Length: 240
Image (cartoon, rainbow, N blue to C red; front, side, top):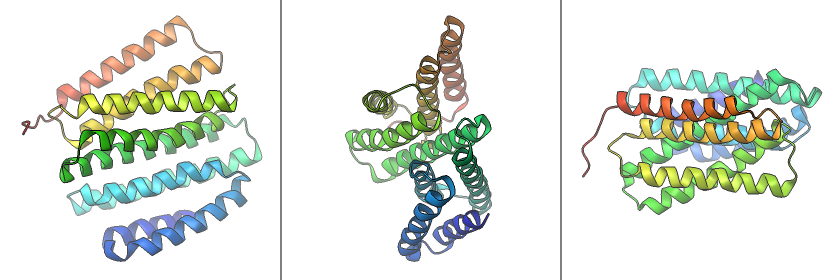
């Protein structure tokens, strides 16, 4: 709970005093690194929590409504608390499925924040598409790698690297396609997250020996259905 209060305070400082945030953020990340090693006995949980924190900070300036920004602060702190609790429980028992679900939620939330914020800043700065492609690939790899470890997939290190690179490439290609779409950063971020989740779910089921034709068909239908629903219900912006 103490870490969660620190997390909320650090996000509040980023929201209220963005000009003075840098050193506060660095200090919080150092405290988090030491604390999560003590809580979970492993460092890889720090990857998910750190990306969640920085992604939330980057997303905050893109939220126009102060009330919505404050609601986001509360939601982000709630996800952080579940992630810390999951890390603690996994430190006690590595096969705790509920704890794994908590870590998975935090990882997907971190990716959502990064995908949404990254594309939002990309639209505001008007940078070349290859920059956002590289950024998304770099962000995807460590989170995917941490997920492979958390979920105890039957992979060796080279396989974790290979499939992490594959998911990074998948996201980079998807964002290249989406960069020409007339949609805002929120829609694009959600669509990228759905693509990642679908690819991740197929890999997870395969290495947990749960892959069946029905599961594969469901994942493909889930990807097509949810992506179509989001794109059809999204606000279209004119291409400039």
